[in-house]
Image (cartoon, rainbow, N blue to C red; front, side, top):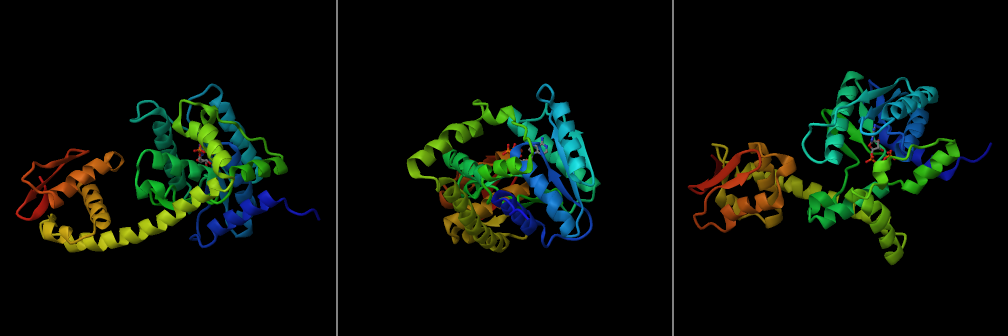
Length: 327
Ligand SMILES: Nc1ncnc2c1ncn2[C@@H]1O[C@H](COP(=O)(O)OP(=O)(O)OP(=O)(O)O)[C@@H](O)[C@H]1O
């Protein structure tokens, strides 16, 4: 028997790891664009899942943004059915009219559709094909915009997607491995023109910045950036836990926060407490920036009778009688 090609084996191992320990019940749902990453993911999942006693289903989202997108999506679904998925469906989404740039709008529409399909199909997890290279790009973009530790932690291998776990089994797999796996398996990936469109920052990082870093610093750069994300994520988890305890300790009976308790916290924990509390008050997470948290912090550490701090979403925080309160 011919030996299994290393990239195919590595991807199957990664998927097996991700699927092990999931709750029993419904199928795992693979989100497949038809690109090399999610095609390799889909091929591995449809192989591994039945061997773990699980059903696998596939969904592909048609964003309707390019000519021929409906045909392409249908081709992905047809491949999925032929490859052995229990079902393979196309979901058409409406991107226009959503807030943010076109990339953000498409992402929001896609994740909303994935959540709905996962619920409808009673899926125990949604799997996406983000790779180590995507993670390295995410870290670089976060670094460049000064996003702080939360951004530098990159994408988690697991997060909640509207009550269903979203898993990224390929975060330690390189893009060259997904491409090689597709070649070995005779799969022809779709090349998304957005991925090479220089008007997107991520495309420029992919096409110009990462290759330049590899040339300047060596081939280990991509792996090192992804490791940085894992290390920072572990530190974030520890700090978040401390912040949870500190938030409970700072809380006053009326829902405000005690300034003396906040003053006793180290800045890294206090910042997280204020961030978490602002979100509780209804500040919009996507728009809540370092600047807003700094304004809250100033009410605690640089108090000179200043006015309230305004947070995105119409939330207003003021200092009154040794407490921070919304009002
Ligand atoms: N149109 C789509 N339909 C279903 N899933 C999608 C779609 N677009 C993206 N995804 C999912 O999100 C993941 C990340 O997509 P993104 O386009 O950011 O990265 P990519 O590296 O180009 O991935 P791929 O090579 O799989 O297209 C994909 O691997 C896939 O799991």
